[in-house]
View 1 (cartoon, helix red, strand yellow):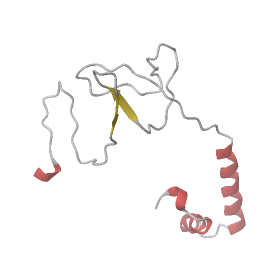
View 2 (cartoon, rainbow, N blue to C red):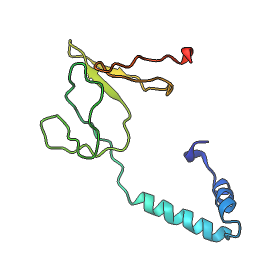
View 3 (tube, rainbow, N blue to C red):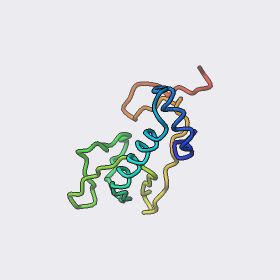
Length: 120
């Protein structure tokens, strides 16, 4: 079940599994406090560019990474929604999300072989 589809009744039930004697009004107060705190944070969507290197599979997206768009813009990200790569014609191609977590990923310089889930 996705977090955004939880009802207050379901949250109270989950809290009571750990704290069976917690009063409902206290749990409701905690939920309201959490919602107020969440509302105090800014949500922003930022577009950043990174320079790619031929045959390089992994790139630094840590808190110390910077955008390569010519500015000193720090990435500071917590979720990536989409990734586009520019091809040799200058067109941007969207890279699909990796949905199968059973794949073993390697880069070009790795000596490891890719393992297909069908061979397990």
